[in-house]
Image 1 (cartoon, one colour):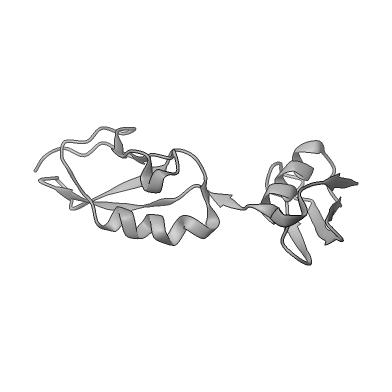
Image 2 (cartoon, rainbow, N blue to C red):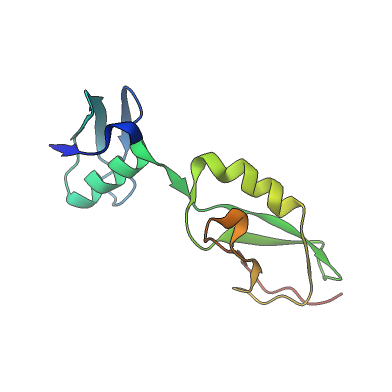
Length: 131
């Protein structure tokens, strides 16, 4: 199966991607052939979409910890509320390291809104009471 996309957004070459959408775990071959994206080996439409995104613009949910002032613990686990472009993960981690939240914190609280202008929030993954 092939999908037409803007040639300027395609990386060169090919990549074999293990699909993680369902338990089948298809090995999907994605290749840029003269500006045409060739996707083979998937057993469902969702696998094709996953492999395309992973080849063209991979994203990840970021999980890490953040410093807390006056907390029962010095750090709180946090995560992004949406996937972050993979090439911006390191920059996002550096931004999170600069910031210290104040206890008390409730799970789901937005600790950093619109991090790096990506329209992605960094949220608390647990409650944390004051010390």
